[in-house]
Amino acid sequence: MKKIVANIKMNQTPSRSREYLINMISRFDSDKNVDLTLCLPYTSLYLGKLLLNGTKIKLGAQNLHEEECGSYTGEISGAMLRESGVDTVIVGHSERRVKFKENNNQINKKIKVALKNGLGVILCVGESLAEKNTLKTLETLKTQIEEALKGLYENELERVTISYEPIWAIGTGKNATIREIEYGVRAIRKVIEDDFSLKAAKSITVLYGGSVTNKNIHGITHAKGVNGALIGGASLEEGGFLNLISLV
Image 1: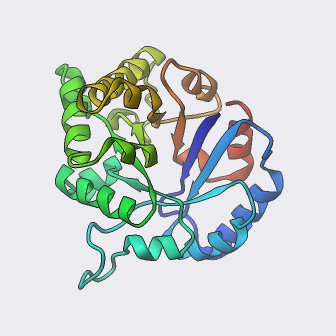
Image 2: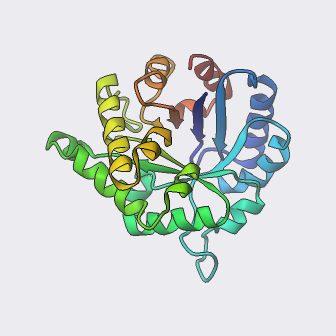
């Protein structure tokens, strides 16, 4: 089964999310070999809980705070997400790292608080164009993964998915080649093998994200070691997204 995750980002009001969800629920082929998660804006999460209840589509969130509660105006906690019906939360997306200056220590704390609250985690990792051009892809991935997963037990990896998202390919229209994708995914699994076990490296779910389209989705999801895709812009319009899913 291939795992497909939609990252809606800051793109839907609750009324638009309602329309989107109703269309997705009515038209998604639940018999297709796809595990689908929709990561909605915070303001649409409870609506998602109500509408997705009883369906095979999972509800996801795009971020959470690293503390359980407190004086953090404008933030959202793991407990809030759990009670909003969230199954999985994205952590460490490059937009959070670059635009909001999140570091690996914060990301590690977020993963731990998510797991403590019974949430699955999608950990995003990936190198910049400068790191790619200076042959630092392996070093970057190793650092991001090791620091993000520091202190976790191997059994906790059952609720962790890693998404390889080279920064230079996110929203740029620049497509990583299958060879580049497989190279990054091999590197990710090698870090997991070295730090945990070969069993963990083989069993952990690894996605790819970055300018995924109808033209490349099949090749990406069938690349060696890739278990699915994290999709941004191509998931915003339900008709096109459903067509993309049909090509997995």
